[in-house]
Image (cartoon, rainbow, N blue to C red; front, side):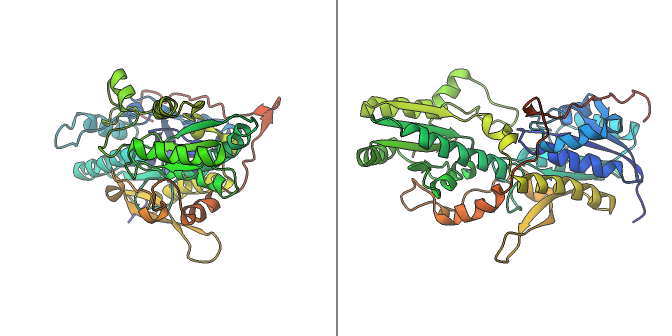
Length: 418
């Protein structure tokens, strides 16, 4: 296969993480060094930026600012939740994407996101093949939910898990200073997969974790939760409960579903807008037990806490972006970079490629054997799995005692041919 010369475009999609921009830096810095890549573009707000031809010339950025991306949280180019219909159903968006790619001679496309983003990546890749336009399309993984198929873990999970475990340790100490009892319900992100909520067990391994953990993998009755809380409270005089935002009862009803229905609507992928499970469950506990209850929703804090990021996570996220570019230039297309854990005694992470079509819209859930038999706690194998992923501290540059995050100029690409 001969050398493919042309521009590349990078875009971010879905929920941000504290390390998604490390992957952006991996893609952009690597692409800028490769002669076959004639221009390096960034799309504003994911696929919407490509469709609207709102793209930036990343070569116009200060190299120092690009370096600062490594420790900058959120999606530096902006994100989006936009579902492409299949091109056999409606090819309007695809024709526009192809037009933009041809206009700017874009021959490499890198899409940074989770399950739904890999669906977008797969569809674009297949359409380019069908159209006979050579463009190498790559998925760069990210999701704090850690639910992507085909990879041992996902960029963003380790840092979020570290923040969650740290927060539970701190709350555990704070909650026990009074001589009066209290129940604390902490809600952690996780729609259908409870990896993040399960990571609270890391704090438990240090003696400062939740007493009870409930994941969406195992539907449970409210009566069972109440019985568990009452038992713990009676024994300890307090109780800390970790729940996933997607926790369901035995009938499949979301604990937060009533709040969602009151707000109405779903996102572009048909997902319920979650949140509020902790408050709902706290009200139930308070009504039934007549004790002081404090609900806590970690919300966005768990995915943007760059100050508490894992060095392992940062380095692996960067490596994923770098490998995507290198493999695309080498001739690969239609893949996502994935992680494979070594089989040796220490932690070792190897990079591999998986077909995006196999990743798209699939979810990897917490194995049943990693959840205790009673369905209210986590077994040691999950702690052993997660601990290597939270190691190391970020090396954040500070200014006046505060983090110095990247400040991109986002210079628009001219409307003429690039």
